[in-house]
Length: 328
Image (cartoon, rainbow, N blue to C red; front, side, top):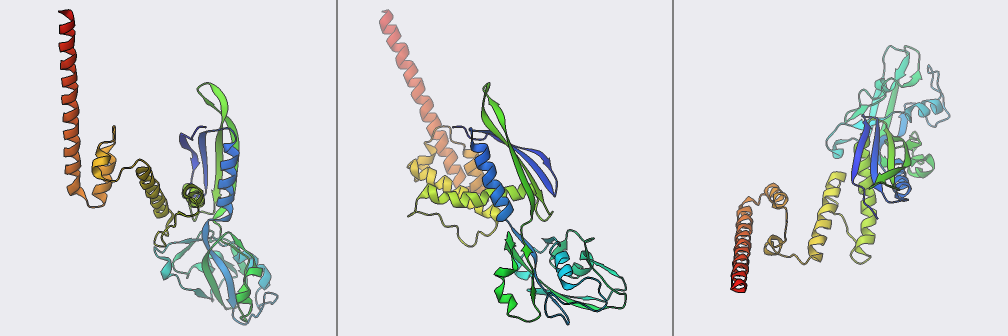
């Protein structure tokens, strides 16, 4: 078995990223590639329009006076709008947005529809939504929320009961397409290993690099159950909502479990470990505001170093005395 040693970014932009992962044991290229692709396509969160209300329209088979497209065509266009959250807090997002279209223009685009929507940026503002007469005014209400993957209209029964709210097949996923290929990789002149090349295309609301991190975090959360067992399932507290915080939490749990298995319970046990990198622990303690304890650790380390040096000198001296006795 061999673990991947590097992840190389072959290409990266706001909408597309290409990554090389190697080396992998034979067969792991397909295993990891399939897992990442499935999670990326189906389980990443995003924001999208999930229902609309148009003044005077009761269902999706209606027509609007002065508008060329029918409601079904308008819905198909609205489904293609891609949104990016600009607000720092999701709690500030209203449940719905009402837009008044009284512009003296015939073609209404996504930029015109969502220009008055706060908290969001429209990533495809030139997308055509509808064509109307110049004097036609419209009042449109859009419901926007966060979701995962693809949610069809059939699963929105709670909206169908309310007259005037027209539910939409919603595509929440920010991922456009994911493909991967597995090639052979050389390790120590042996061509028996895999290298995985994964190509990720997004709608621009998330970078491919962050999308790959989120997908990896989701897989880690699921495999943690198998690592800890049924009775000791790792539960991530609700306060860790961001994927970066979740990764840090899982990493810390893994580190603590490693210390527990090594029977390291105190700072004194930790100091006794040979070749331990005190730079990392000191940096972490500084971030936690525990600078005052760093000196104690460094002093303890110096005492141990001095003790070991003295023992080496004593052993050398004993060897010298033995040699002299043998020569006599």
